[in-house]
Structures are given as C-alpha cells and as structure tokens.
Length: 73
Image (cartoon, rainbow, N blue to C red; front, side):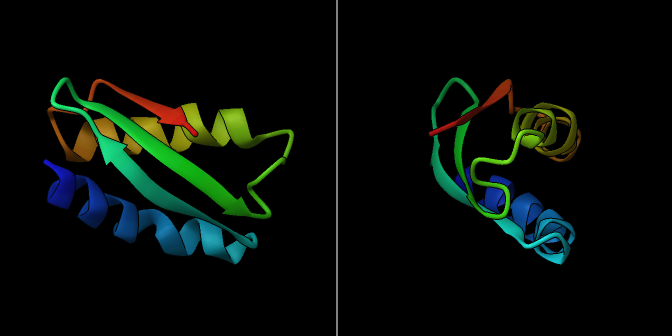
C-alpha cells in the first residue's frame, strides 16, 4: 500500500508546491494509518490541519481504498 500512497501524494504534490509547501510520506501502517510531514510553507501554517484533513486525507482515501486516516508527524 505504501507505493500506492506515494503515487497518490505525487499526484497532489504540485498543488502544495504552488503555495510553497510540500508533503513527505513518513510511514503507512498495516491498519491504513498514513503518517506525513508537511514542509515548506505548509509547516506551521495555521491552515495546515485543514489541508491535512480536508485535502490530503480526503484525496488519499479516494485514491487508495485501504487508507483509514492521515496523521502529521
């Protein structure tokens, strides 16, 4: 599942990079919990939680059926 998650993140990476941010895949658990690190402008941004839950998590769940949650590290 890690490869599928990475491929999905790569699809959305340009959107984050347009705003000066990025996302790095840290881990994918067997239970479907994805850990990511927000970098650049996304790191410390007041909207980063919304980006994480409403953007990244929603997108990953639609692209990779086994994803249950996305958590920041």
